[in-house]
Amino acid sequence: MSVLVVGSVALDSVETPFGKADNVLGGSATYFSASASLLAPVQLVGVVGRDYPIGDLEPLAKRGVDLAGLECAEGESFRWRGRYRHDLNSAETLETSLGVFSHFRPKIPAQFRDAPFVFLGNIDPRLQLDVLEQVSRPKLVACDTMNFWIESRRSDLLALLGRVDLITLNDAEARQLTEEANLVKAARWIMARGPQYVVIKKGEHGAFMFSHGSVFFAPAYPLEEVYDPTGAGDSFAGGFIGYLARSGDITEANMRRAVVYGSAMGSFAVEQFSIGRLMEVGPADLARRVRDFHRLVSFERDIDA
Amino acid sequence: MSVLVVGSVALDSVETPFGKADNVLGGSATYFSASASLLAPVQLVGVVGRDYPIGDLEPLAKRGVDLAGLECAEGESFRWRGRYRHDLNSAETLETSLGVFSHFRPKIPAQFRDAPFVFLGNIDPRLQLDVLEQVSRPKLVACDTMNFWIESRRSDLLALLGRVDLITLNDAEARQLTEEANLVKAARWIMARGPQYVVIKKGEHGAFMFSHGSVFFAPAYPLEEVYDPTGAGDSFAGGFIGYLARSGDITEANMRRAVVYGSAMGSFAVEQFSIGRLMEVGPADLARRVRDFHRLVSFERDIDA
View 1: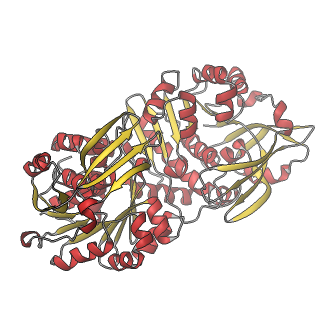
View 2 (view 1 turned 30 degrees about the vertical axis):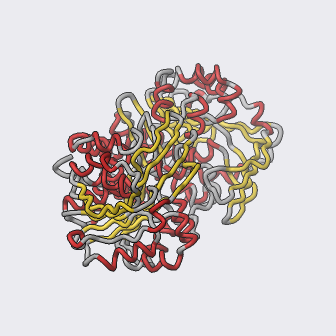
View 3 (view 1 turned 30 degrees about the horizontal axis):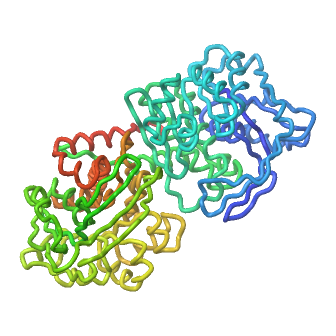
């Protein structure tokens, strides 16, 4: 089954304690696609400017990312410049230039409208809602968001919550949205407004998936080298939704596995700048890392417990 | 099998966003004992002043904590006053008064010297080393430490590392001791200096146990109400070592289970001030929480992985 993703396609310039990269492929839809396409066919909807190195997206197309929904508009591409210091958990934004992204109006191509899995990347909730008007009854709709929309588009975001099955957001965003310091309470607050599943990402501290009556946790993989955390959250989402699409199964047991596939893809994403590592890894690497995750948390309960 | 613990026995005054408690039982040896005694007999070595409400320790004695090594010295007891604001991960110390603890010289009673499990709570590494001179070949020796000793007693601490099987410390302390930002590298640095196991506690973000060729992770339990984080680390250590002592088994598989028992006891500790909750819970509560931990991280690998 295929996954439709709507989000940003950008050029990133990033500096970390380990090096720097200039004008490399970035954006939520790019990371998501690079990750999900290892598991399922992906249909991308986004916008770039005339300056975008479209040819650099060729490897994505080769891996099954349909770029028919990538609009090329008059103007400059979305560019982000950021820096990570020693705390790799938080990026410092040095410059954001929205370019053509500021006028983005997602148009879902006819052949994408029946996608069974939809991921609404981090864009204006009004546009996320607009995408839902254009698609027909997906099996699962997931969305991401960020502090900017929580502040500036609160009522639209609340309307969106009523129409998605799952939301991914980080711990700070969950606290900001719900005004609850406690994540269990924050998740309950969100579920009361629509989503059946709430995935709270804690960066290097792993991710929780809350649902009614159940909570699942997957740690982040303890890597020795983290080069660039950019895109880890979207790569997580790509692995997660990609796995669901591959299996077509949205039972609780499979959703748990999907979180682990998401964590595995997130752990690859940070091993190199941009989507470099995501495009290198194959199914055997992914299977190996999922096994490593299983070993990382496995313990046998004893007879008492 | 019994556990010998050497550490502080204090009076804490604590303020959290949820309330305050004055002059309640505290100290590393107290939390450790309250936790471990649910699983195994405990032998406590520490010191208090004449002002200590010794009678309040009676419930510990009833639960199998042998207080024969608790010295009552002329002077004031160790008192700590602290506050947690909304970030429950870090305490703000308002006042520390060492009292008789500043002259503490642990004397291990003859009947405690064969204890198969020894936990050296967070005291001067010179005293921790001195305790090891007084005991005969334990099956497992674990120690804790803190930033103050890492700064002021570095060479003694390094000598201690050569003589313990396991060390517990938090992520900030691991980074400070090793000057490695990455926890995997930090753990390797420590293991190269002696301990076969390194347990890195990350507060609400769980705990890693590193050993040669293996890493295990247990999340902190996602509680809806955290009243007071004081003593969570020592309660973790108590559950961990207490479980090992109960089973007498220090294989890797059992050490993993022990981390989960430690996490379970840590999660109880924070539900009330002081050792209140630790003294309330029974074996059935513990077994239930261990089951909940298992459910929290369980996923079935699929055929591909």
